[in-house]
Image 1: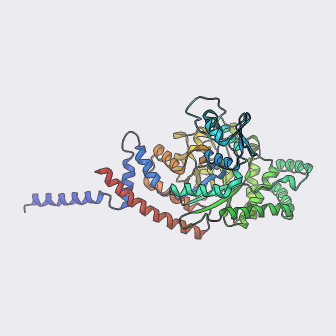
Image 2 (image 1 turned 30 degrees about the vertical axis):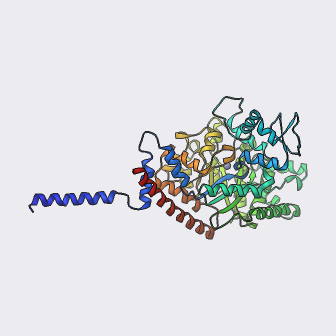
Image 3 (image 1 turned 135 degrees about the vertical axis):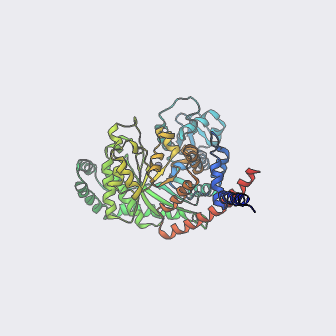
Length: 490
Ligand SMILES: [Zn+2]
């Protein structure tokens, strides 16, 4: 063989070798290549992406609210069963038995027959049709938060059934774990203090200038409440009920855990009572894995008391260090509140409250010290991303959403639904929004899924179990997607 031909042969062999090396060989590589192929055109191939994400194991959903996750249609079925009705004028629940419709109250079957009223009710009880046609509208954040007032009488009545529905939905979309914000414990400061005492305590809490000054009041309240039999009995009742409703939920394929919370629009004494009860409840029950603080962050009381709430978390963290802390922080945007309120919520959630998970984190671009805060979140916390919710309530989407900032800083993120019943979404849809908007790599998507295991408030044993389950599910998924990829190439 002359030298030229020999050289040519070697080159050809090397080239073939490179081609084989470049060819995706494992199911994981084939799946990644398939995923990348959806973004080759001018627009993502949404239908294929949707199928892909529907099949994909999604690990856990770590940020969602029980009452907002049940769809309106389900609430109406529960009302029908109780034979309760709907007030025709207000479209609120008529919490009494109605055997026959009359001018002011409709039975649920008659409501369903009245298409105009039925559809109107859907727009009030959820975000349905808010954007796609003109009708008399309140601002979107009000529409969203008002929704909860419509189903508040029925929502707490069927927890066991509601949890079974959430479990069934999760399994159907290949979600192995959910951590549901179930409700607050149900304590009320009015049962432990006179009106005069309440007023005085609220005033001193709001005038406490430092953590130490606030701590002195927290200790006083805590000491009194820990001796109050009624206060402790409410906590016991709450955890016993939770245990009862949880029966039959965990199995070889699925786990559910719960967070309880305080409502940040209440007065600060009530918020402290709720948080204290929440921490004690978590210490007493293994299925109750964390404490949160909920309700609109732009509410006047919530804004006024924000730092005080963080100080409550700080105090309770030192008293109950094993209880995990998540909190809604930075669910705000420009124009919604005064600029000064956009400057410090995430920072204080990390620095003062010691939040192990940040819910939303949308106002980070506006915060002072945002770069230092990003580093801290990266090292100490994780951000729960709720794209549908942020788009509807805050009007923040696409390039305005701080996802790309968190991504650039390698801040850990998890993808969650927030209120899928009110928003009429699901976890798959959240991944669809994320991937079609920002086109993260398959590797990143997988990281978000495994983050939902890593940052779950589970004990180590349960976490390892969940990790193994999700790894196995990915093996099956990638095998299936490799086959799907072969089909698409035919
Ligand atoms: Zn939320």
